[in-house]
Image (tube, rainbow, N blue to C red; front, side, top):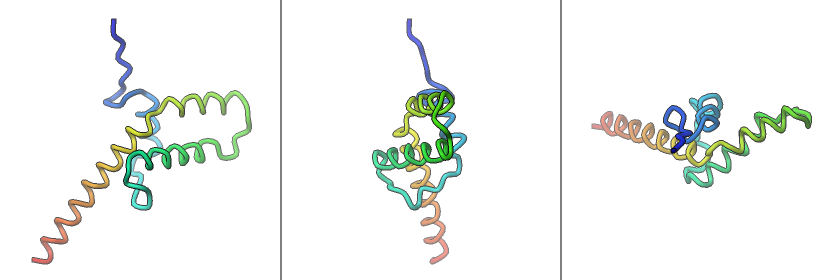
Length: 99
């Protein structure tokens, strides 16, 4: 028996949820475009957002466990692809205006 843990096209629920609620419309212009490096930056960002002023305890432990299940590399690949697509469109528009 196989168990499919994918969720809405993402590797798991945690990845989908973090991408949706934290990185939807996230601008990576000031971040690395290398998916590996970006994935580390994204994970640090999420931990800062989630754990700011959160006292140690059960809720923090559960949040940490949730975050550790997310595939930040997958999110980074998605954000880099979107960034490249958006910038290619802008370049094409700029080229058309110059003609």
